[in-house]
Image (cartoon, rainbow, N blue to C red; front, side, top):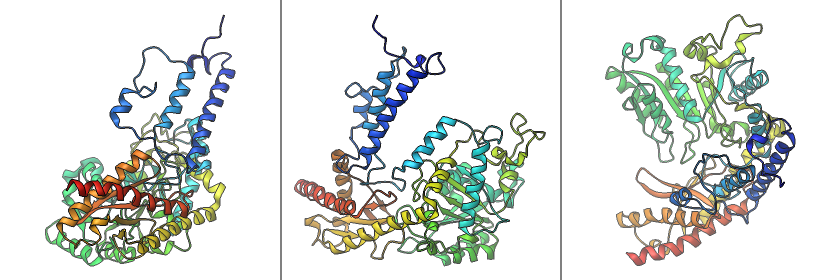
Length: 510
């Protein structure tokens, strides 16, 4: 009788399932190892692009549809392989599309262990080691921010948007604790302030918390994308004159598009003068605190009442890994706790201050700390510093190259503060065309056309967007330790090659 193909029921915890499970895992590791190797190989594609309708109908035996009868383990392994095949290799040295990129092998090992443990961060009794690791790691991050030993609290969150939401939630509770029980109807009209270049999550937080997105005052920035302190001061005074109650200011340390750093000390002075909560969204720029050379760009962050810092960005931790750091201890607990008796009993036999679940607005919380803790063990603070410095060196190399080339134009002429570099590719017919609406109309079409062709060929990825009165431009960001100067040079040549070919067709059509 031929051996039948194993099914998932043959895996552990099935009796005599050890050999089958071991074989399945070994095959899976082979698939994952092959993918990791390909991710670092420049000859491999960043992505094998297909349109949504193509993936929906199925490709070469890869189907997204769910069966009624179980499929065998061999098919599941094929499905795993195909899932990786048709996805994006964000660890590829030529993936420049997002602020979070790279494939850290130690971080990946940490994520595997975390999933294997499959526990929850709400109580010490089910997650003793991870709870202590989180305390140690948050304390380290608070120390790096510049807070004293008697200050500081925090928690890891599902991304920077949630971390920013926590900051607004805590600020509101700090000034108006009655909101927890009575709601917004018991409060005056609250106003918060953020810059025109800040992340959209600030407005989203106001909407989610019932404050209202129209009560977010957008403060003007200078040409480099930094908040103008005088405009903030004026906006606060205006809000007060209108009978509103300002309570919160969001300053950005590393804006999403330009990579700009708001003047934190000047903003902190204004917040202190008016008695406002200062939050620093350093989701993108927080990694620069690891660098002695670049941390000066966040000077004044120690004056913040709360800080968002995403190690899954510049520090390269696998997604997701975001922390909200809070200067005032106990505020997270007071704001969020509801004392659910089935989880947070007061008569446990250990110190229940380590039951962190009531500090959060979640119940179940994923273990995001271990991969970062393991990476820190592997690299040390010095390793992160070298990693950050290299990313900013790549940005400076790209900036220098762009200045030399007549077929590219920088969005702003000053040297980048962070690893964001923003630029246009200028096709031949536009190089001698005077500035104006017609040139802008044509230039606006260039980046999307190049991006589409680049994704179809799959050898690199870069993002683009318009901003204010500026038509579509490329935004290249560096957070991948695998990226070298040769990859930067390749990107420019690839954009020029694709752009020249595409723009000829655009001009012919016109």
